[in-house]
Length: 365
Image (cartoon, rainbow, N blue to C red; front, side, top):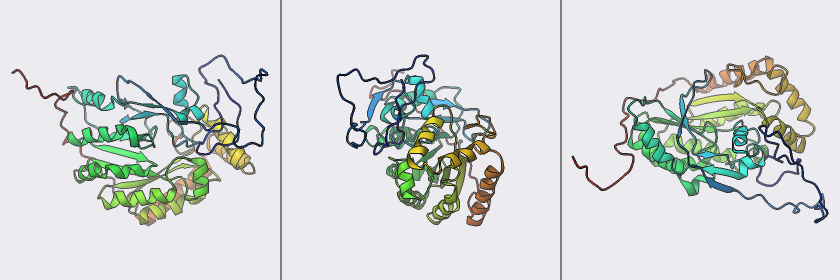
């Protein structure tokens, strides 16, 4: 089902639901005469979209990865869909696998995995399990707003902490500060690190790009809080959006380093599948005079296309603009002393959980 673009709704990134690419049929709304369409100039005509959360009973919780341009080999996503509503999110197309749209559905129809801890216990107890740092926040944010109620990320961290299992986290949320009591002692054993993603320091732009994420200034405060707790912390200037956020690159790195960041990374804007249509409409709604220029540079970076899925180039792009960004990042990082040391988290301390189900009953033998 595909809906036509509408004016931006407060607190939402996408303006419509593009059709599901796996469906052969398409549907369009039609006036059947029973109700008059709302007036176009009435901002209150459309009801606000509410967030719904559905329980998803997964059979496994650790996702394995062998991509050559990604540093981690296994990850956990406590949630599917993300309420932050970042218009550029490359994870949006995964909602199509649920017969939902990567547009507004992705940020309003969320799925939680309350049995994540139990599944993780089972996987960590397998005889053939090889300990490697688990990455969280690689697809959807583990600290998106619904984590305050569901606390699935917290439960996972409690288990990893008890097992001395290393973990890395990427987030746009200040909620990660809640778990400093777990991440701090883990960091003392070289078992945890946190990356905070900052796309821009422009509050107005950030509100449009990432409507329900923490403000850029609040994320800088989170970097400081995490660093002050002795937890290795970095900043992800991601994604770099040509002619929109690239001007902030050095400013973000300066501010992050001043607040205690010791690592930094960056990625280029990616527009897979339905994301390209969502992003194009977002540009036309918010930055109509710049839209064509932005997309022109995107195509230059992506070999004449809106997106390039090839390993080796998909994260950074190619061409003069991409090379310039890489050089600017390298010079700024060197000046600020970022990435001087790359600590490898300790996997030697790992001990499997003793039981998959907690019970007061004593063993028979």
